[in-house]
Length: 135
Image 1 (spheres, rainbow, N blue to C red):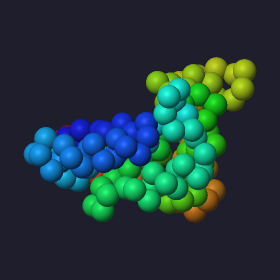
Image 2 (cartoon, rainbow, N blue to C red; image 1 turned 90 degrees about the horizontal axis):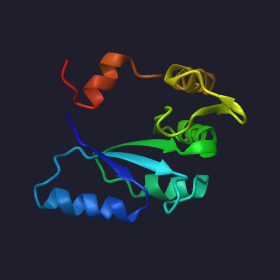
Image 3 (cartoon, helix red, strand yellow; image 1 turned 45 degrees about the vertical axis):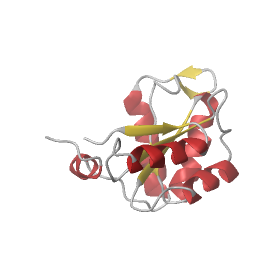
Image 4 (tube, rainbow, N blue to C red; image 1 turned 180 degrees about the horizontal axis):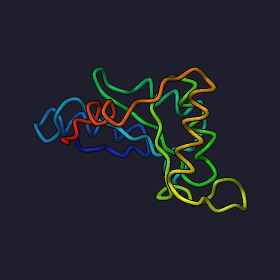
């Protein structure tokens, strides 16, 4: 299983590369861009582009948004061809004033959006392979 490197600003990418160089992190590096968290990078398309531009070669990255940033920034990520993550850990609302019924509701929306934009959604088996998870 690959360790996930949660990125709150671009400097974390450089720190991860240093840890890899010193033998503490295996390749491929797996990044999760956590956007909209207090003290971190704001959830804008411009900031997302910067993080994606700094993604090291042969690495994987996914995008997550905190709170109200979840739907807009994951939609941008889908449009840019990136991977996304959503769940109650990052946002408890489905829409303003409406609590989500669970993680499935948030994921189902991202699946619908992905399909509307012509993006394939990884199967469970494909996801396990990408993340190097054992069965």
